[in-house]
Amino acid sequence: MTPSTPLNPVLRLAPSILSADFARLGEEVRAIETAGADLVHFDVMDNHYVPNLTIGPLVCEAIRPHVTIPIDVHLMVEPVDALIPLFAKAGAQLISFHPEASRHVDRTLQLIREHGCKAGLVLNPATSIEWIDHVMDKLDLVLLMSVNPGFGGQKFIPATLGKLRAVRTRIDAHVAGGGQPIWLEVDGGVKIDNIAQIVAAGADTCVAGSAVFGAPDADGGYRGVMTALRRAAHP
Figure 1: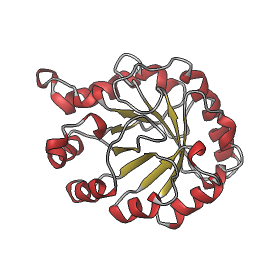
Figure 2: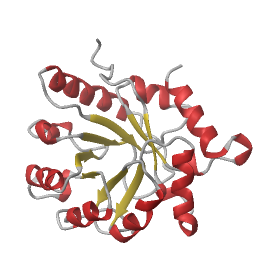
Figure 3: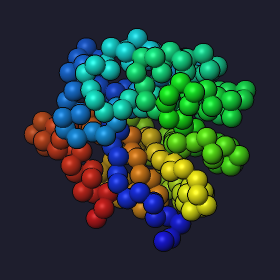
Figure 4: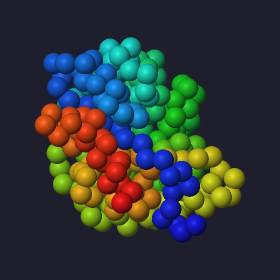
């Protein structure tokens, strides 16, 4: 097995509701689940850690009854710890955060797990992957940002591919040594024309916002684009 080959070949697709129609959010999340989504990606921005303001625990609680797939909460907030219990109570199954937003990364990961959720660490394009080295035992997810966080619809940063390969090598070594499975997720600019490179570099979970929610009905809508993404991922 090469370092860039995921131990789990399954590709998970996580449409980001940041690109959904917020006037029809319940309908939108039901539609992506019906169309084959594996997760609902839920972007939380605070206009402090990132230059945008989005949604909070009440919205998470509101959409929870509309889907059976997991809600994958990405916290782009600072400080982060106070929101973790609120999102866990609101129905999140995965919660990830940026190490720059926590004074004690190990403690924050443990807090997420104590509230019954899977825990993830998010690395921005310029954030070193060394952040994960001493907390591998508490990680269920590593999320690499392939754009700078704050806004949807940005272009994929090509340097993310090398970073993906490096993180995949660490994850594979951890699992081979008896450690727990860790998902490797990518968020930002994932499209039909680049998903094969992203998956080949080691990703097993891909966030897609505008690529999914901007899909024209003439091309099969949400189901059509997610089918196309899966096919393109393994040419």
